[in-house]
Length: 219
Image 1 (cartoon, helix red, strand yellow):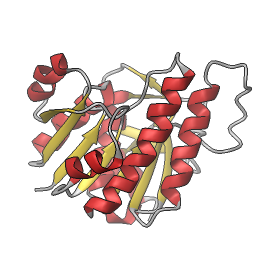
Image 2 (cartoon, rainbow, N blue to C red; image 1 turned 120 degrees about the vertical axis):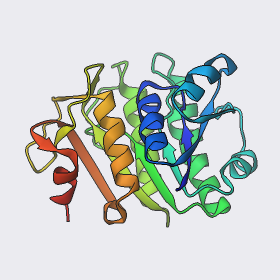
Image 3 (cartoon, rainbow, N blue to C red; image 1 turned 180 degrees about the horizontal axis):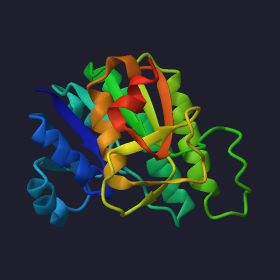
Image 4 (cartoon, rainbow, N blue to C red; image 1 turned 45 degrees about the vertical axis):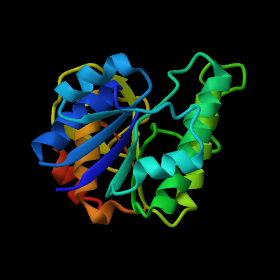
């Protein structure tokens, strides 16, 4: 059994992930901003912790993370407000990495997106620009830490039922594809159990290969 710290605990991917982690016997501390979401988190098998990452400093985050075995970042500002996007998707995410280091939590899984990189190609007048910039900065920072990191880059997210099957970039995936949020959660749960995914950026969409087989192909 592991103790998982999950940022963005009421997100659609996160709620799926909480159910999977509970079924696997893990304990999850799900950090949420809105206390009214606590019942949903409990129903998914996690322990809700009310904590606004946008307002917390590194010392407060560090205390939250102490005693955990892994961190999963699945939080986001939700787009629309560039200032808030930078505050959450970049600044708070980077602060959580520092907090993980200071708390001695080595394992860190980042839920990013397919194509997140400094040369993302999104024009400045596009509403997606702030998100692309923020995620690129956070991912780049994570790669430069000494954490045992894995970055997940799912393509466009859907609300479709889980398929249990994906394809990975370099093995058939395409950045204009789609993947269900439930399958993203399944990939996140899987990589937490796989030390061989440390130091890997895994971009993927839905495909024909069972998740475990797709991840095996990365060895």
